[in-house]
Image 1 (tube, helix red, strand yellow):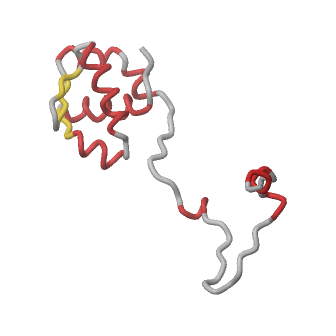
Image 2 (cartoon, one colour):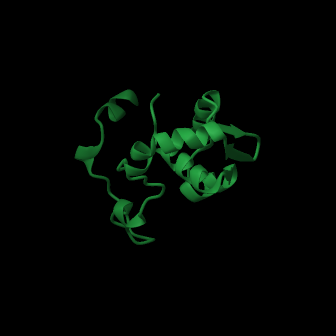
Length: 116
């Protein structure tokens, strides 16, 4: 079974609190609904957790499974970037009424040929 970063996030939080609200997981860790559903389906088939429309809870089997795999779940080094810093992605800004001239060498030449 392949374990993703979102799986580790959900399993750690679930083991700590036993019951989680699905929207809180989405809001705090910025996980997409597809990531959450993939994790829930994978672990519910193994009877590690149970879920309904709004919450998820860990089973006794799940508690034993997490305890047996604590070394992997808690010691795996990962970096989850849920948001970005705007400073990294901001380029040069021009003034409001300043003219913009694109750099011709960066424009794909096929753009001009397709218009003919």
